[in-house]
Length: 255
Image 1 (cartoon, helix red, strand yellow):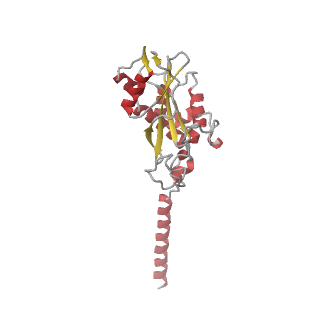
Image 2 (tube, rainbow, N blue to C red):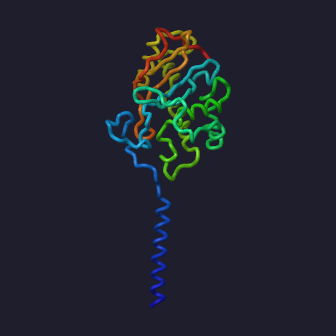
Image 3 (cartoon, rainbow, N blue to C red):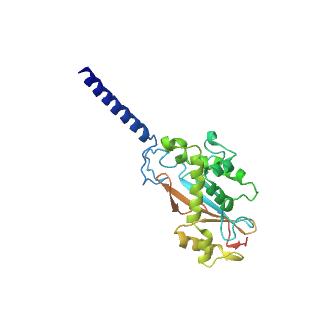
């Protein structure tokens, strides 16, 4: 009888331990988020900043610099979280604990394919890509509140936030092919155009207004697209909230 009781107790103990192991395997401290919630449209509700970005208007800035990057593509300047009214996030970034001046080596070790792509479509005109990417991460990437390590829960791996920030920017660059959209509208490098012609070509392609900037001589320098974020990481294009610096005409130089 004693042996039978001990056997039963051992079976129960084993079941409890197995249950505990299973609970440890599926444990996840990441928040449960409403995937349909649109940033800057909170209507006064208190929203977990892991579920919707605190800086909820995000700007994808794509630049056109002569002799930089592919001849038939805009290169990336950055992905910048702004306030909902279009104000800038803190100029020194949002999380000093995640500042790094080694973003290039980090991405190269974590995702070699992404690293190679960044060298092609996110180069620095100063020639120091690591410095450029480290600057963009520290000043802008650290301000994407949904990419904080705690937002991943127990699934977080070191530097996952860094890789995700740069990968999202690359994905948006591919989705919004500015050069292709302009080319389809008959707007190609080497000529001068009415600024409204370029604006209309891109609005027809993407359905929203963009921001077009020129240098002091009237050459095209940068085009920016503005997004709200649905849930944690679905970017929804919206109209630009700022006017660009180009006047009536813009020269689109060849690279």
